[in-house]
Image (cartoon, rainbow, N blue to C red; front, side):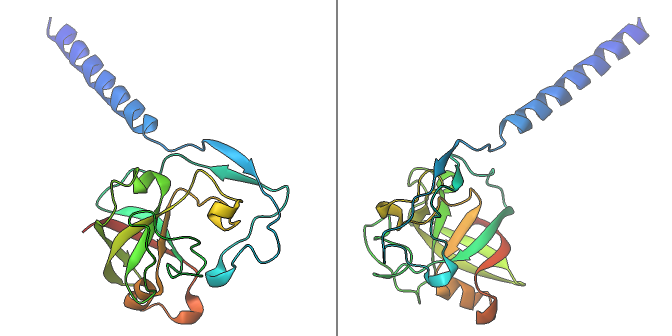
Amino acid sequence: MKNHANSALCFLLFLLLATNLLTIEAKTCNPSGKIRGKKPPPGQCNPENYSDCCKHGKFYTTYKCSPRVSGHTKAVLTLNSFEKGGDGGGPSECDDKYHSDNTPVVALSTGWFNNMQRCFHNITIHGNGRSVNAMVVDECDSTAGCDAVHDYQPPCPNNIVDASKAVWKALGVHKSDWGELDVYWSEA
């Protein structure tokens, strides 16, 4: 009888572990599609701050999701200008306004932006041995790109924190190294 109880307990533990692993697997973020790049009309793509311009015929992966947010969410920090005429394109999604490059603001990939649910929330970005708080003001669109609305830039990957110059300065990254940096972030 005791062996039967131990076998049942082992089976239950196995079942719980398997269910947990399947749940974790279900939370992964897979691509949602692809879009074909279009050649930007002359002067329509601003390559400031290492921004890419779409290439005619190239396929770009799109995402409706981002990796799960935790207290230590891995991301790639990129550089963006939120000023009028900057490579960020139009005004910020959260308030339909432009923001100074001297203000610590960010755009998050579509999944993390969460249908504007993170608008005006502060996040803490950790990188280069330092931390900085920045306000979320925009979406780095992972679902669309290569059109006038997106300044003829490709869709963002699903793990981007697109930051103003103020964020890069606060992290103490030498200007010659600005562009991309592996970081992690958390809710402030």
